[in-house]
Length: 261
Image (tube, rainbow, N blue to C red; front, side, top):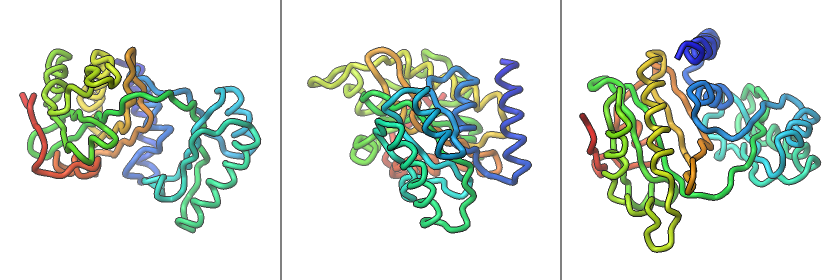
């Protein structure tokens, strides 16, 4: 994957030169694109007029997110707007997001606002990667949304991993039936989820500078899936599987860790 590696090197080198420990969301999603992970169409707007133009080009409704190296958790900062339907609302939203970010952290460096196509509803899952100090690189899969808080259900697999092994990971979670249309729930595309996990495995295996990947949520459909949010931490911040679970809202000690080869 030469083209992807070249793109990754450029993105990561820029982040390291700026002494950042994490990629910005547009950078993280460019990494996803380079590895053919399914992300909604997006653009980074640096002014109100540009935001409106980008929104019209992408098509409404859209999602808007503040982009700042100093604001990792955007929702807490009032840095996310969902379901924006008009150019006027988009332009007003741009101003609002900047104001919220400065109110949250006056010294925050603002890179702009991510303008992204709003994805349709589906079943939310979590896909992650970690460079564990003891075991090396590993991938993670779990259910998202309320399942994260209630079931605390996740599986890990060592990198590199085969797609057949990823299917074992997916079927190893306690809430697997939630993916299969249980009691009227959406029967999601397990193959698309498995492909996403495999690509995260490739990212971790081919890029030693990356310490952690959180794709949360990944929205799964009856056909395909979409990475709605992506966070990538650099290798200087790598940790343990427990830390990845904790960062994604899981409680250590209550996880299903099947598929650890």
